[in-house]
Length: 182
Image 1 (cartoon, rainbow, N blue to C red):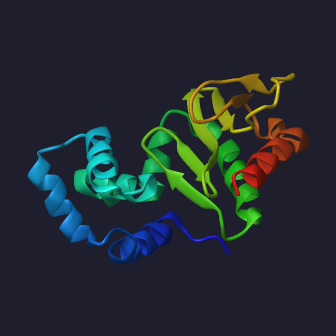
Image 2: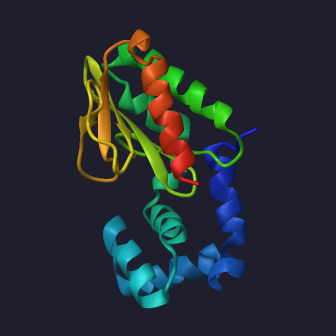
């Protein structure tokens, strides 16, 4: 069964000394000494000056600025305030990807939920009060029909306004993106 985001974060925290040479407390002191306060600044310093991989740098930065102190349930709930009718679409996507196995990471952020394997393969974002944009990373695939081109971490997106639109076609794209992320 897939680990919860909290369990995944704790595993990474537990692995920090072995993988990076320092504990979370030690990294927080390093970051404090730099005076950096923004997430991007902290990640850049950790990666550039200390050779920390992106995943660990992101975790350390989030801990330094307190983003991981908000529960993942709260992050998701806040995304759907005023957009409650979209939450069933989100839930259907999450329920589907949970069937992919233990390599799955579901990582809620402030405005979206990142779906990762070894790298991000999809992104759930309630973009308007009536639509979720489901970003899918399918590099090399031409846009077709509902699969629109997109720039950024995901190469494509599908606009979803109802659970029925998260159909077999969209599920196949998400599964293909997951498979490629391994």
